Image (tube, rainbow, N blue to C red):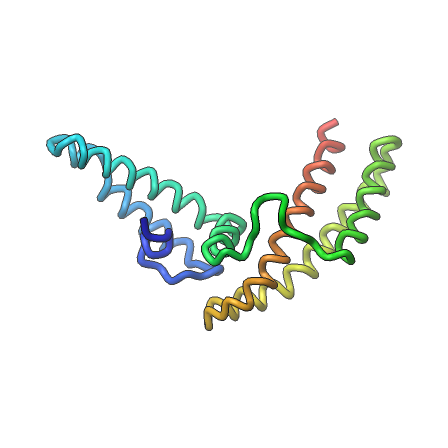
Length: 174
């Protein structure tokens, strides 16, 4: 089956017009509604059902920045299998400090230390996004796949930071 962008007749981009994506999703949803195919044979009904499911998957993937980013990276075989991607040592060292702070918080919660960790993570995310945004916007213009390696590094680091933030959320819920 064609890729999600082709399915919606959209250009492959990191920065999509989400209103246009939604319009095309609803148009496909109407076009593929099972009620229009009740008189068709079983094979046609199954095909329409599969296309309808594909439409839903495509929309759910493309409407979210992270999903769209992962999809584009996977389309171009930039991301390896889960757990096989490598992060650079500098980033991992920085994360080791944050993970140590998390362990300290688990043993003895301190609101000031908690807020400091949150602030550090936001700062790291902001720095990472700056470089990645330039690469994503440039890719949207020129489709130079060499830019995807920069974006993949950002994606993997962002994913790592999201796991840390999930751990931090446990302190708030406790």
